[in-house]
Image 1: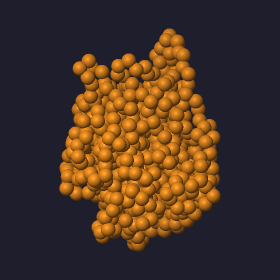
Image 2: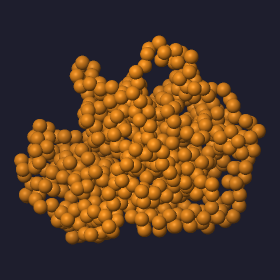
Image 3: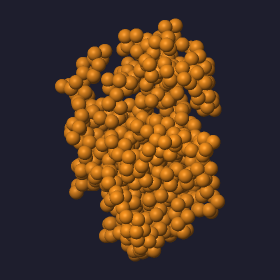
Image 4: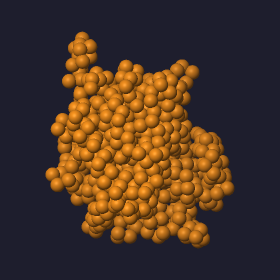
Length: 633
């Protein structure tokens, strides 16, 4: 059994940043436990121009933490004080990355240039190109190695350890995927940086090596926020990648085929009166890449048309960059699209040539993953991409109901219904900085009750050992495929009461089967995956219960449409089945919470959003609170 001051679970951008900041604050008895430094979402994802969102710092355009906080919280269902912290700490997190060597662009005067992203009224966004988060991870890993911070790879967390008597986290149990042995870690603090619920979905742009582990925290009773609020968008399937930004702005053809590759046709044409209307909508998908109920009618209809083609008609959908159709006339596009392409000198005669002009690395990215956009079409679908919800944390990113547990990164549900693009990367850095600061100020001494911990860990180990005593009946791959298919059917961006109720019944039955299934004679990796299925399935139950509540109370909003027989028909080109339940807008002032109920089932409720604080501090007072540590009380 290893004893640490702080255990960091996960090695994405948020977990690494927490480790680096803790070490800088002289908290040295720390270690990162991870499946591998090359695993996870941060190091394996991106987009055409992956965005990092921060306080504006270019030219004469005014900005401030309060202004940015109000824009962060404008989508609703977000606590205003959390928004202010993410805004205020954004500059610190950004320049820390710059100082570590992340190549964010600046001009000859040293100003870090920005651009507007979705839901952003100012030019706060920046980017290193397609691999912004990968650049961040690489720089942070180099710093972790320079500081000699311990990294323990090939470990899968299978149990969080808590002391119910003191309502606190105390460590975790891992499976060593090389040996199959269980390993216990005692820790004063646990930084839980396990990412989003990528393993829940079949149609997903989360990297295949990333599954998530929020179920481990839900299992021990950690409260969660806004689990029903996720983000979905068009993404490629053979290589999982968002087809946002310039991938749409260069106006590719949308083509569908039968499942065997025959019967090729441009299916979007049945929904638009003219080619110019169709291509203007495709152009807008670049700016408005995530599916958004607020863009229906609007550019998000393209996601629905793609869904109809792939899910209802069982066809395949592709983007074709090789040639323009004969009837495309760029000069007759919407003024916004035509001006953008003209000012970008992107008036070439094919999408691939325009993409070379706008964003050549976007072509190379696919070529490096064995897809040649110059000579083949790109298969796509509407995929799960990000969970705006997650575990509930306070202003220091400590769990609101389990002390010494610090969820950071995507697993922390700081975001509301919608958010400016790129805020997730900023939120992960801000949360890491805040958690490290609080741990360094308040939680450096050892207060874990050793006797309680030994009892708790022995009980949990005995339960895991008991699970190994009977012959394994269920194949973990088929079990995972079962709940992933279910989640993409019932819990993605198109939602209906009957479908979710059926999915919940299936999930509860599958959970019962998995809990009675033995795990003996499994190879080490298979053992870890079988145990992982249990926490993923528990997470699915929590997510589906939250989605059912959203359907009942809230209606269509954010990344989801709720279908209803007595709803509003969203487009006269669609059948009567595409009637949606309008949003009950008053719920934007509330956050949906999920917690463990008295009978062990999820309990769903609502709490009022806290407003953005209007601060007017006095220097001497703030300085005193900072010097004395009163600010942490």
